[in-house]
Image 1 (cartoon, one colour):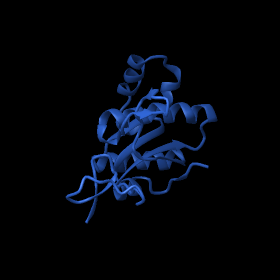
Image 2 (cartoon, rainbow, N blue to C red; image 1 turned 45 degrees about the horizontal axis):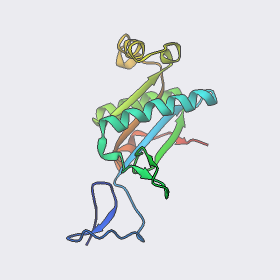
Image 3 (cartoon, rainbow, N blue to C red; image 1 turned 45 degrees about the vertical axis):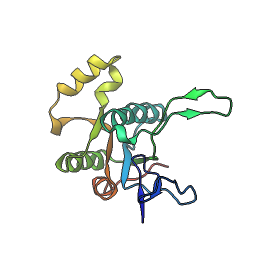
Length: 159
């Protein structure tokens, strides 16, 4: 019987041998939803900030450190793909509400954060606005694939 280990790698139940020929399929999804009207540099910036929240809140999504053939060590990264979507302001607002109602871990980026320059001011900018009035330009969400798919209803894959 096949199952996945804590890193999502397929293993035979009762056996520590890894089946490296089998495709890896994760039962969770990491997704970023960006507002479609962002400039290219904003899309990159927002995505980078948002995914950093997922790694800290859900440490199980972080894989093992990397090492090249010369023995040079590199930082670990997510063990699974990050899917990036886009949608209108309305799609983003609806997705935010669905993520919160399902209790999924989420990170938000508001338009106010483009005008701040540090973490303290970023947190203060979000704290100053009620949940339903946030001017969201992006959010990241992590959870079971089906739940994340429902949250992203109406969004499309980023081109």
